[in-house]
Length: 103
Image (cartoon, rainbow, N blue to C red; front, side):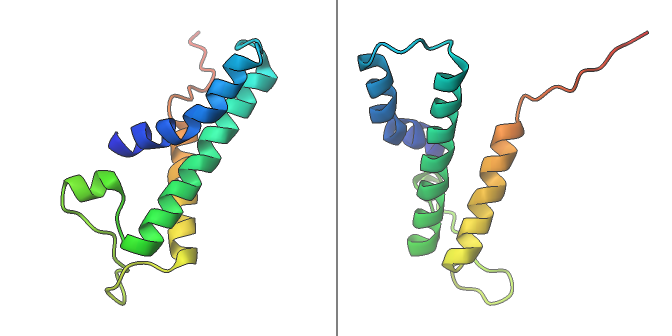
């Protein structure tokens, strides 16, 4: 949760630009741009913080660290990018409800 708040704070300048340009928040293009911005910022935040320190601010609060299960040290850049990509894709699918019809 802490990391999501940080990603939101890093994304807020872009959201402020949307507000300042008087774009319509309900426009699908604006919604898509906002979601894409949040996803890119989140991906970069997770990748960079895990690559350099092995933890994010949220992980640091609980004294946790990400390590490579085979070798022991913190993950490489490509491992961190893969981890961040899977996290962002799982976050994007959260709340998705398939169309289920009960007869």
